[in-house]
Length: 134
Image (cartoon, rainbow, N blue to C red):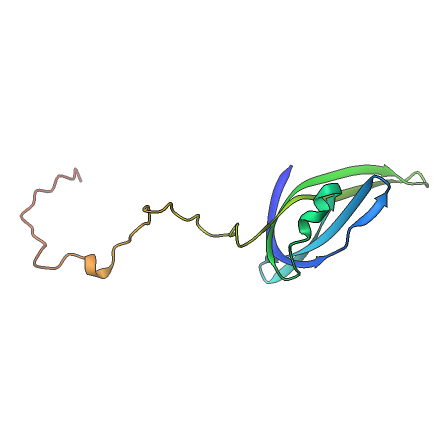
């Protein structure tokens, strides 16, 4: 399952070498959700850990991630469920503006009428034929 989240980089942790062949790195994204911000922790693994290097705490970023869950039986025989937000891409908000309308290609800018474009009383006539059926 692919998802995206946009927010402020609140905390970034150093990469941790979990085993000889596995490393992970975590980050916390502050996401505005009404009156209360949400602090959401993501995990990056393996070669993706370095994708966080160019960003600083306080930067607005977009995180693309997968929602992953798994079942684990601990030493007591209890079944425990884990959920991970597995980040696979981090982009600067400067290149991916959230909650904005995509820009128009050059020469395709929209122009909206202003009060200057409104017809004057001299240019309006009642001599035209009304072709509307209602």
